[in-house]
Image 1 (cartoon, helix red, strand yellow):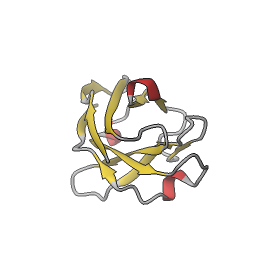
Image 2: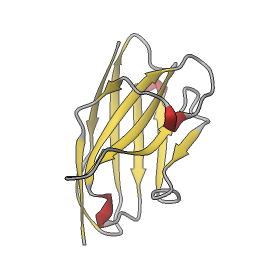
Image 3: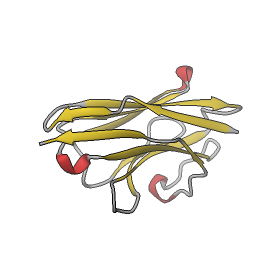
Length: 126
């Protein structure tokens, strides 16, 4: 019911900033929770951040707390991940994921997201 397309990835120097976007289309957007995950070569996919249906509830992996900010604009059907103070270890393909939750609060990082984008490459040079 929801299709996701990531954009905004690229090459950035360590300490720099980048914002990736996730554009969603489908029957429902506002009642979905969205998460950002990343996968580096040779490593497993890991949770980065997530945001609830209202935008008021967010969650972050410890490795990105204080550096990354997730947000959503329901009017534009878009989810954002603002990444500041980037480190080489942030280099990965970043994926957007969605899960219908209804207008309820839940544990965002533990959701079994079932809608996924194709990913956008983020490369941080040292």
